[in-house]
Length: 98
Image 1 (cartoon, rainbow, N blue to C red):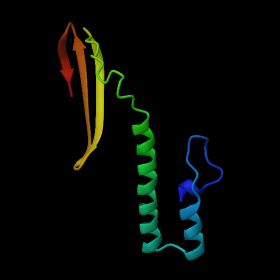
Image 2 (spheres, rainbow, N blue to C red; image 1 turned 60 degrees about the vertical axis):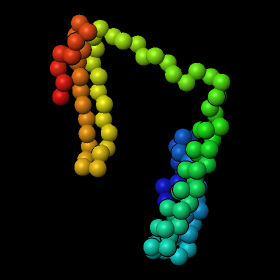
Image 3 (cartoon, helix red, strand yellow; image 1 turned 60 degrees about the horizontal axis):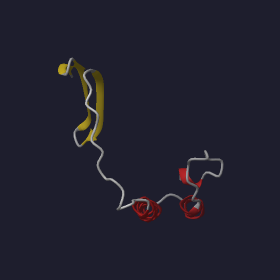
Image 4 (cartoon, rainbow, N blue to C red; image 1 turned 45 degrees about the vertical axis):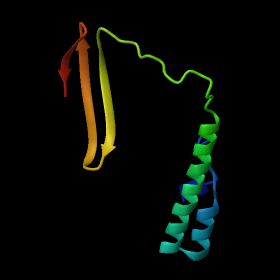
């Protein structure tokens, strides 16, 4: 439904198909299922485009820079809810974590 908005931001995709179907037949399980199928096809196209940008002759690993001090943060959405971790490095040692 959001992708069917013609007044979108420049970075947003525009695809009025599902909004048009919804406007013609109304909300239903059929429309929801069609939207999911249509989104899966769009994800395939995006993934194919990203894979085509990979240069197999280019370096695939760049060794990370090790730092003496700094702060780090990581977050993800886990099955049981959001998971986040923080870390502080001082003098090449872990000073604190949460």
